[in-house]
Image (tube, rainbow, N blue to C red; front, side, top):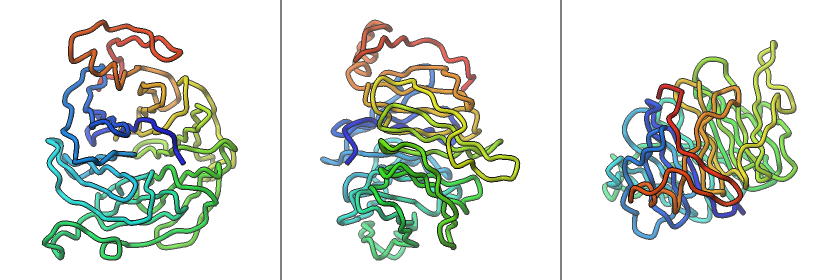
Amino acid sequence: MPQKGITVAFSPDSKLLATAAIGEPIHLWRSDGTLVKVLPPISRFSAHKLDFSPDGPKIVAVGMHLAILSGLDGRELQRFALPNAGIWAVRFSPDGKIIAIGGQDTQIRLLLADRSARNPGNVLRYGESIFATFLGHQGFISGVAFDPTGDLLASAAEDGTIRLWKLHHPLVTSLTAETGGLMQVAASSQGDFRLVSVSRRGTTNIWQRNSAGRFNPSPDKIFFGHQSPIHDVTFSADGRFFATASRDGTAILWQADGTRLQVLPFKDRAEEQRSGGAEKRRGKGAEVTIKPCCCGI
């Protein structure tokens, strides 16, 4: 089971990052480290993972047995009841019509993102919202990601593999990444299509298609950046950047090739920014400096 950590997601226009932690509210940031807004908590719900809807200003957050769709003002729009799923992964399809989830039961499920018209109570039970189920991983599902077309789904799991699925066909291929267990995978949505996976060991792996249009069975690049296990990774909409979020209390913004650009603080350091505290302080095993981002977002 994943340890307590934070999750991060880019808005569709790449101007905002959303971060959250178990037991803490969702924070919205600009990429220069400016805290924009803290969304009000949804009852006692704890967000394990987040994703922005590509077709509007909405966020889906998943917990152990729920997926909740909210506006950027924190207003709840729709709730999916998912008993016994133990959800730790979520991602919208590029057209916003499907939500892929995965969790402790090793199954990947595709949910229809909007079935509220047939459910006046706005609470969708599992059987009413399911589109498809994929089986094959030998450990809990910790990350899911769609390719730009929405036809290919990548999943990462504790068994240390990334599996690629066609939405209407069986498993396409399996990639081996980390024996220590993967925590998340992200797919670039524009440009040169690639995958980025992150692990419990704190490594970030970049996977890129070869000349034959296939992914190599092992990562093309492996590097460290965080001081603790990395719990989440997400690409910007234009595919030029990705962000990682770690148990060390930071999110890092990277260029697509793995060049580090910016470190964003979280947890206790978010409160420090709201109160006008120092821009530089020592974190858990690492010194974090807030500086202007050079990526132009």
